[in-house]
Image 1 (cartoon, one colour):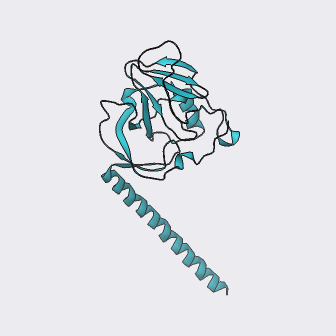
Image 2 (image 1 turned 180 degrees about the vertical axis):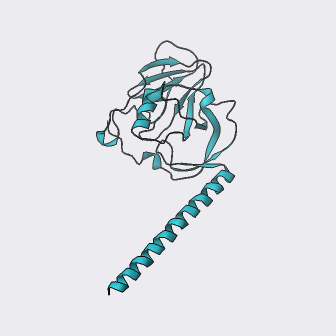
Image 3 (image 1 turned 135 degrees about the vertical axis):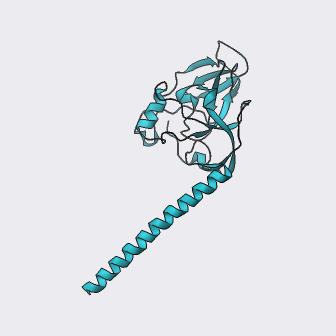
Length: 205
């Protein structure tokens, strides 16, 4: 009986080793295929979860366009530093976002969300409201209070863009403010995504 138990344990260990090797090989093959097809995987609920195709240079930029973005520097963006500290997202991994406003446009940020206007204005902007752009106070489960960009009206300067994502608990310019145009890496488009997955996390207050 003991000899049989040892044999079964060895067999299970052998199968486990081969399973691990198989997973590593599949991951490597999938990674090579995605690079060849110019695809990236988005696992956040900022945008629908799934694969996005990278379409080359994003310039000239257009509002409403989906793009791949380099993470803003945490040294100048407290919300980004907080997100890296609590591992809300991995360091160095680009994001998929939408361009909400370009240089010359005006953005008004309030607790209830973001409004975008064309042209400069010192007064609050009453242009179009970005859907589901309410600024969250807490992370899911109320574990951490979320740092957000100061509420107010901002006229975007040359070289600045305002990023937006429509999902629940989306981490966009409402939290770290406008980002430099140079952070925009490529245009992007959904390739295969799960519709509605950007709303899987249920919002609190």
